[in-house]
Every structure is written in structure tokens, then in C-alpha cells.
Image (cartoon, rainbow over all chains, first blue to last red; front, side, top):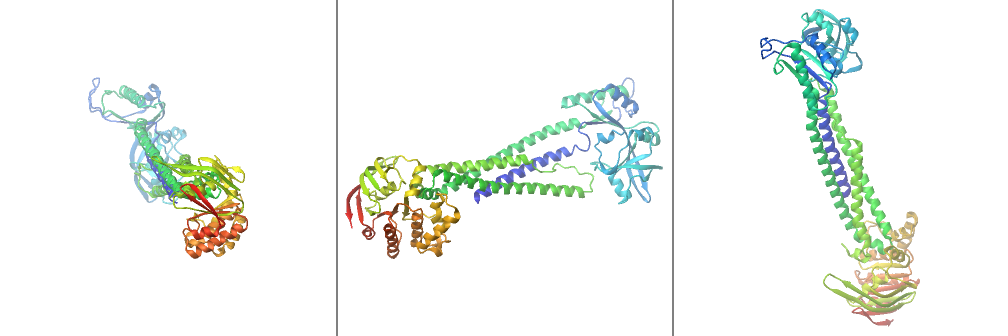
Length: 399
Length: 224
């Protein structure tokens, strides 16, 4: 019984520990889901240095020219979208709210990982862009406020003073900021942005798989922008770049260390389990030396005694190992279930987490259980072999 | 049936050695009823252990049923014990977590007899010992006499040719001693060669032949 419980406990602790490690891993990774991990976004600022006869303190704004320059001069960017940010009152019937209004290109969806449920419609497409369509994609939160339970797709909302038809509902929770309504970039330029200037450009980049490559890309991007907007490349106030890939690589580097640490703890837990199981098997067989002596005296062949001890070990460690495994998986799944439920009920937009889905791969679970069972069997086999080898009369005298 | 020629046995410890049997010559016929008597440390139990193939001897020869018992592998020795010899010990040596019936049936397990059949046979033997009602009791629920009768049933269930009893009455009161001796005598009547190690004269007097052993040597053999 004690042997069995130690096997159960060893496997249970191992699974919980590995689950916690995985939970940490999944949590950190999930924080990068708010945008593609290979995304880069830049915001225009104010120059803080004079440059080529131009004064400092100039407000720098992007225009289509900068998007074009990026397109022509840089190889790495893939999907790009200019971003026009406004605030506007959005009204449906008697319901209204003040939301962020964003003019974007179709590729924005992939850069920022927007999500659409099967019945959530679609994102802005090239036709909307070309036709300056008065169509809007709203965040789920906006839908819930303006439409409650009523279907929203195809309905019209008033943004400012212009009516827009809802074509999609983004179900991804925003981590920061206000709920947002997305309209075609060209429509936003036409209606809300007569000077054609905007504050941000987002893009995805390819092949930047190291910190060095990302740093070099950031430098090139600043160079292109410096030539395009006329500011000193050393001017840190002129533009601000957020390179998610660089952040991701850096975080993952730290995180790989944590994974290694959890793995080492896991290995030590397994070793502790092996030692525990082995000791208990050793004691339990030693306690049975007298019984083994009696069995031998009445004619039990050594092979039969060894076989019965090994079968017993397999049964004990197997059954209790399975029990510990089920308990461990059960607990990690329960924690996961509770976390999923809590996340589903959460109304907070700011739901950053460092812990998520603390479940363990079944392969690891089975391998660890198997290792513990085998060690239990070996640990039982050693003293059993000794007991079988000594003379029955000596075995019977042993207490 | 049993022949020993110049059998010697020495026990070695790290510091000393103890020559326990110093050239035993002995012959026991099939169906004999023999007791071995001697003081503590005279070598009587060692002799019984060698006869029961529970221990090895150093030099000499031991023939059991015309077969030289020497340097047997543990598997061969186990097979001999199972087929030829039944044991009764002073401390009963029952397995505590098995009930009386399971203890009695154990030798049949090693003869590959099915559980149902061996339990039925065990019940028969327990009945012969007057313990049928105690079949499902654990040893620690039984008296010394009952335990020894269970041990005797276990010793004879595989129908051995020889029954070896090491101080079978050592832990029993006089009335139970008498009952056990009656049982052993009855078994000998059925043709089982019975050898009892004892230091009680009353017990030895029940047997037909008493072998007196002193300091590892047979002093004399007394015929009752």
C-alpha cells in the first residue's frame, strides 16, 4: 500500500510540476497573441533635433508616401497597413458609445490577429478599400453594448454623422485600450482625414529570426523613415518602433531558461520518486524474506518466487501509478477548466496572464509513469533475488 | 531411504568457525519413526536441516531415496522438498496473511494444481486435523496447538515420503503435545518416514528409534 502511494504521489507531483511549467509557458506565449509575433508597428512623433536646415520640434506625420517608401526600399516587410486613429461616437437606435475608430487596410487583420467567429462576418477587403465602402467591423464589446442580444451583421450604425453597414464582428479581446471600430483606410482618409496624414504604420516582417537581424531591420527602417520624413536618424523622438518579433525572441530566451529549470526540477522529482519507490520496494521485499524462506521450504522454486514478486510489483506500481497519473491529469485539467471558465466570464479587456492551460503532454506522463514502474520492479527484483538465493533456513530465521 | 556417510558441517563467522556435525553416519529405513535427541547446540537441528535439504553439508555423502543429495541447484532442491519432504517447525512458520486453508494448500500451488482443487484438498486435510471450522481463520486467530495442526496438514498435503519435525511440541502445553504426537504417530502408521528433533524425553519415547547426538556426533541409537 505504502509502495503504491509513493508511486502515485511521485507521478502526481511530476505531472503537477510539468503542468505548472507548461502553464507558465502557455501564459507567456499567449501574451504575444495580441498581434502576429513577427509584427512591427511604428508611430510618428516630433523631431527633437534640427536636420538639414529644418528646425527641431516639427510634428512628423505619416502619409501614403512612407508606406510606399517602405514597400520600395525594404525587402523584409510583408503585410502592411497604415492606421488612422480617431475617436468617434457610434450610435445604433437609442444606444451609443464613444469608441476608437480606426481606418485600416485588409492586412491589419493578420497583423493584429483579429478573430472572427463562423457567424461573425468578415474583415475589410480590397473591394471595400477600392470603393471607399462605408462598411465597418466592430469589436464584440461594441456589439454587446449597442446591440445587446440582437444580431448586428448587416445593420447600420452612425459613426459621427455617416451611416456604416456592419460587415464583421471581431471576437478577439483587446488587451489594452478602448473597444474599436474598423473602417476601410481609404474611407477614413476621405471622410475623417482630409489632410491625408496618419500616425501609425503596422506590418509583418519575414526572416528576422534573431535579435541581431531585428536590430538591423529597425535601423534600416529608421533610415528609410529619416530620408522620407527628413529627420536625424539619431533622433529618438522622431519615430517609435515596436518590434514584436524582437520582444518575442527576447522573452522566449528568458522563457527557455525557465523551461530548462522546470525540466531539471521535473527530472529531480522523477529521481526522488525512483529513490522513494525503490526504497519502499526494498523494505517490503526484505520484510517478506521469512515468508520467502517458508515458501522455499515447502517446495517453491526460486523462479516462481521471483515471478510472483515481479508480478506483484508490476500490479502495485501499475495500478497506483495509473491512479497518480489520473489524479495529476485530473488536477491540471480541472485548473485549466476553471481558468477557461474564468476567462470566458471575464469582462475585463485587460486580461494579460502569465499562466494558461497548465496541462501536460500525455507522452511525458506515460514515459514518467513507465520509468517509475520499471524502477519499482528493479528495486523489488534486487532484494527478491537475494532472498531467493539465501538458504531457506536462513531466510526463515530472518525477522 | 536415508543414508548419511561421514557428514560434516562447519559454520563460519568472520572471526571463528564452529564444527557442528563431525562425521555423521546414519541409516533410516522407509516408514521408520525416529527421534533425534540432544542438548542445545549438539547439532540435532543442523542434522534435520541437512536431511530436509534446507541446508548444505560440507563433506560426506547424503543419499535420499538412493539419490546423492549434494550441490543441488536451488530449483532442484525445491523440487525434492516439494515431492519428498514435509516440514513441521517449532514456530509453525505459517504465512500470517493467509488463512488456514490457504496455508495448507500452498505446497499444491507449486505443483500447479488449480486453486479450486487445492482448496478442496486443503479442506479435507484440515478436516482430518479437526480444524474444518477454522479453515478461513488467520494464524493469529488460532491457538498454538491449532497452528501446529495446520502446519502438519500443510506438511502432509503433498503426500511426502518423509516428515521432518523440528521441536514440533516445543511451543505447546502437555495436553496439546500429546494430541500432536498422536497425530504424528498416526501419520507414521500410514507409511510416512517420520523424524522428530526434540529435547523432550516423553516425546522421544513415542518414537521407535531415538538417536542421541552430542557435540556433533551420534552417541548411540536407542530402540524403543
